[in-house]
View (tube, rainbow, N blue to C red):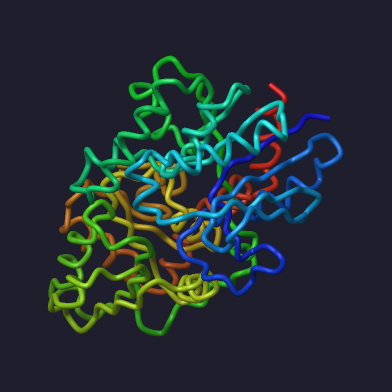
Amino acid sequence: MLRIAILADFPVHRLRGYEGCAPGHHATWLPPLAKELETHASEFDFHWIICTKEVANPTKIHAWGQTFHLLPRKKLSIEILTAFLRERRQISKLLSTLQPDLVHAWGTEQGYALAANDSPYPSLISMQGLLQTCCSAAPMPILTRVQALNERRVLRHATHLTVESPWGRDQLKSLAPHSTIDLLEYGVDPASYDVTRSPAKNPLAIFVGSLTRLKGIDSLFAAFADDRLRHIDLVVLGAVHPKLCRRPLTPNIRLLGHRPSTDVRDWMSKAWCLVHPTRADTSPNCVKEARVIGLPVITTPNGGQTQYVEHGKSGFIHAVGDVEGLIRGVLSVTANRETNLNMGASGHENCRKLLHPNRTARQLIEIYQR
């Protein structure tokens, strides 16, 4: 039996006994993946290693035929500025006890990939964001720029990587030319498969994500402030920066802040389209969920989301910063209900097959075995 140590920012609130923890911003695709990996527990001994503020001392629990090791986390900003040295030492100590056959780290945003590189064991790193690409695409906070420097250190030494999209793979070819790169679709929460679309009586658009220039929030607000879209409501779901609260917005734009996934799915069921004018995105989860639900998407070509959106059929793809293109796209998908439902249905079943977590698990097991 192969022992796999998975280092990841797993959503702790999905584990038994921690349901009351704040959800925060987490890799929502990991719990469904863990559930699917349960079917492979006879072949693999899975150990998840998670750094979290929810424990004061190292804690071990069992779920889905796997072991979850929770390690205490201090202040995240200090960890970032010190290249996660304290957490890497904790992880290294645990790995020396586990003696895994493979170390699999998710994401370069935190210390997990650095810890995987530190270890003497074979390692695999799954990219989440591409921080260096994001920092080139838009102004980013100082801590994010420090994280991008840590990512550069990771990719300098990484030998095996996974990424969600051909767009992401193209970026990695220049960032880590010596690495073996596998495409691995990160599936969405199966709850998205149970959502039935029922577009609101009046056209409604939604945006899901961080309210930053990287995600194109400036283009989004400019488009919906235009007189041609004043009759269409825009619901914005994401953490709101205080500066945005002081900015005058047109009455059709509603900032609802960060919402739980159940609320996001409810808004998607009522929406006429998802608008995602990103400047760089490896493969945004909100676009995946929208397409699994059957929602048309208006986005840009700068990311892996173009795998799920066919221009003119299941949505529209316009250049970054093309406010006029966003306006035309929104007007087209909200012209009438029949057209909207037809666009949502275009390629819908194929997206549902591609993005199920059981497919992610199968692909991942093949990579582990290789």
